[in-house]
Amino acid sequence: MASGLHIWLAFTIVMLIMFSSLAEGEPQVPCYFIFGDSLVDNGNNNNLSTKAKANYPPYGIDFPDGPTGRFTNGRNIADFLVELLGFTNSRPPFAAAATTSEEEIMKGVNYASGAGGVLERTGKYLGDRHSFERQLRFHNATVSRIGLHVQNLSLARTHLRKCLYSVGLGSNDYLHEFLGAAKFPAIRQPLYTPQRFASILIKQYAKHLRTLYGLGARKVAVFGIGKLGCIPGMIKHDENGSSISCADSVNDAVEKFDNKLKILIHKLNRNLSGAKFIFLNMTSISHQDLPALAFDVTMKHKDSTVAFTEARTHSRHPCISIVDKPCCKVSTTVVLKGQCEPNVEPCSNRGAYMFWDNYHPSQISSMAIARRSYTSSLVTDAYPMDIRSLIQLNVQKM
Image 1 (cartoon, rainbow, N blue to C red):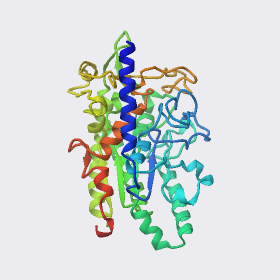
Image 2 (image 1 turned 120 degrees about the vertical axis):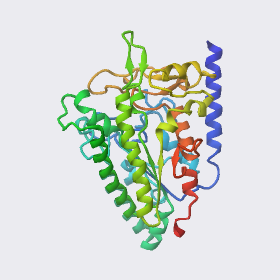
Image 3 (image 1 turned 90 degrees about the horizontal axis):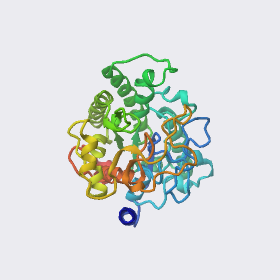
Image 4 (image 1 turned 90 degrees about the vertical axis):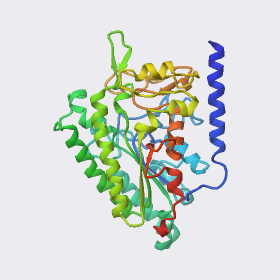
């Protein structure tokens, strides 16, 4: 047992060192702006009046600075993308903008907020949070700040056109709005058919992405939602508490949104001059070969019932072999339901877990997702290209 623990620890250390070495040299883009929810939040919720916080142990147990507001044990997807892009440090949270230098602001900002969504009302029952619309207002303030700093509007626009922008929202809209009536009876909102809700969400998403374009964004990576029904907080269990299948109805509903999002990306590329938007397919990235990408673990979803069995039986390394349970002990209270119990020791073999709590990927999963988003492994991972290809485009000639 001890030797197995040493093996996964050694592999984790080696892979993280190899990953860090990829980021040597000058950044591949002058700046990187991040919009999203708790999957990429790095502290924007810490001082908000909200239940959606992660600035307490065991969150951050593997992060150099400890608990920072990241909803995982270490670095999140945005942190790894920052490294792949060649930046030395993670982009500062907008919450720290007042104490961040102009030079750092010029390199990008993280606006992501836990419980935030595409819809303004999403996550309201948890307390304050930054919706996509509010994050865009923050970015507008940042753009103005950059303009004042360079004292040349044309130069500021040229700078912003070269930046990478990533957007990842929608999960909370499904968790709190579409599924809210069943999971959270206290919430009062209309009930929608899956098709209707996807259409409402896409309409609002399109509006916000056009606003981002209007603020100068020309290279935009948009993350889909993926298999939301396969996260620990959604999967079905038998009478003994063992996982037996994903929630197919949830996956089917989200698939309608992801399909519409890909079509939206195509339309934006056709209609918005000089811009290139890409769609990152989280179903392909996260639920086909993610464990294989990290540590040669094969996981192929033939259907929701056998998915977890396959993930276990095809493992050829002890890492990322547990895909249906969280590493930390999750709370069952209303306040922190699905998040880690404060100050409770998590699992010791953290490299073996795909999920950190009931809703968020572990550090090792986040690393794999970031790598696969940056350089796609399958043609289904990204449309019409991956992040690496996107940042190489010369938008001046588009």
